[in-house]
Length: 137
Image (tube, rainbow, N blue to C red; front, side, top):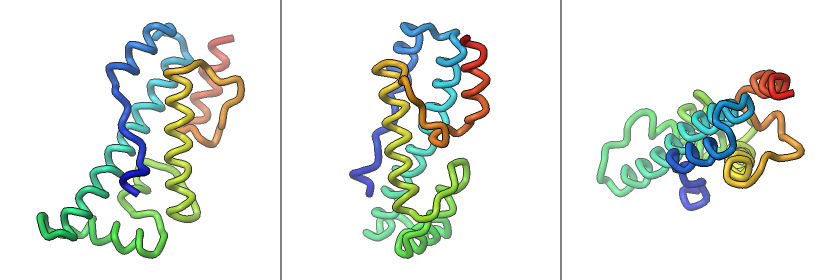
């Protein structure tokens, strides 16, 4: 799963692309906020997976948080540490697929162009999206 976890965003590149697209635009401010939240989750997931590998090797001590993560991953459930600050999903497989799809949506929007169609439930703050859309019109 670590190999399939998306790489963190390069926040310098994100900032440069948002400036080029008009950083003060309501939609670009919204995108930046979504990328910031996604960045935290990606880093958390990558760190947790790396720490699990180190704990299994015996390099670090298996903490209660890591033990919970291992138990939940074994049972195909979302680890408690992942649930904090992320979204609700029925299983770890669905949650992980959504992680990758959300990353793809934000990456393509930032480094490509604004999508014509948006995945509303793929946003952390759908209400913020609607507000940004209203301000952009």
